[in-house]
Length: 84
Image (cartoon, rainbow, N blue to C red; front, side, top):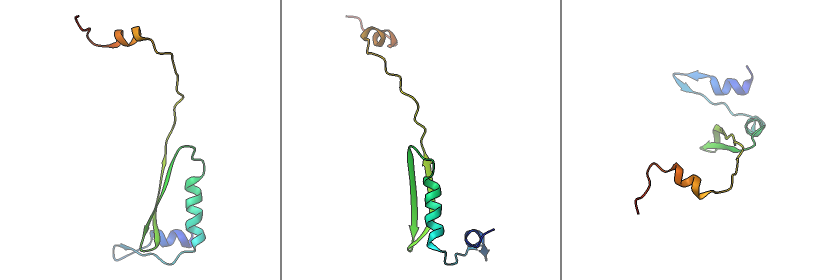
């Protein structure tokens, strides 16, 4: 376990203890979170001037099949027909 990971995982009296970390560790974690994302977001949570959490939300886009609009198709899809 590296010194940086030890800082994140060590506990003392049931509380997390954070030692000063090298800023390059935090930048590397952000870079890793961004790696490979095509659609989505990376959120960096800061508390008292320190990064405490990095959230990564990746969205998967499905191919969109576009078909021409046909009014008769829409009418047949409705559960009832209006009586006119």
